[in-house]
Image (cartoon, rainbow, N blue to C red; front, side, top):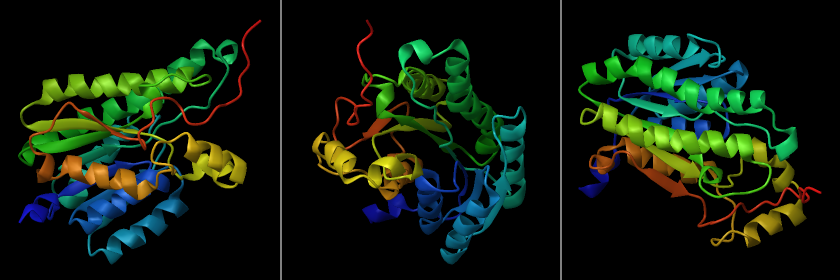
Length: 263
C-alpha cells in the first residue's frame, strides 16, 4: 500500500524548537507516524505539554530543555537522543528566526546572530547526528527555511539572508552526505504560530495577508508537519537536496511592514 511509505515505525527523531508551533506539530506528527521523538526548546513547560501528546501516540519521548546557541548544546542533544532510543534516524532543524529591521538599523551583529541561529545551530546538530544516522543505516534531515529566503521584502534582510543560506546549505549537505543520508528543507510561508499572534489577533492584518496569498489563507503548523513527514519517510526515498515550498503559493511577502523609502 502506498500509504505504508509514509510510516516511520521504529525510527527515532530529534526535533528542535519543539515547544510550540511548527516544531510541536512536527514532533506529534512524527510520533503518530511511528517514531520515538526527542524534543528540544528553551522553555521546559512547553515541552512537557508536547511530550504528553507524543506519549498519547504510543511513542517514547525525550525532553531536552536547552539553548542550542550555546556551543556544544546541539552536539549534546544528538548524543542524548541516540543514547535514549538506541538509534537516530531523523533530524528536524526547526529552531531559528530573527527580528525584522529596517536596512540602516540592521548591524553586522544582527546578520551574524541570524546566521548562527538559523544555520550554525542546524549544522552543529546535523554534524553531531551523522555518525548515529550512518550507524542506523542511513537517515533523513529536514531544515526549516522560509519563503523570505527566496522572495524579497523590506525588513527581512538578516532573516531572509540566513534562511537563503540554510536553503543552499541543504543542497550542499545533501551532496556531501549522499547516498546514506538524505537532506531536504521546507521553505515556509506565513503560518499561524505565536510569531504571528499580532496578525492573527487583528482582523485587518489577517485579511490583508490572506488576500495576498494565492490560497487565500494563512497556513497551519500541521501543513508544514505533513511536508516534513513526507520528506523523512520512505515516500521521499528518491528525494534529496530539495527545498519544498509550503507557502500558499506566494511570490512576494504577504505582510507589508510599512517601511518607507530612504530619503
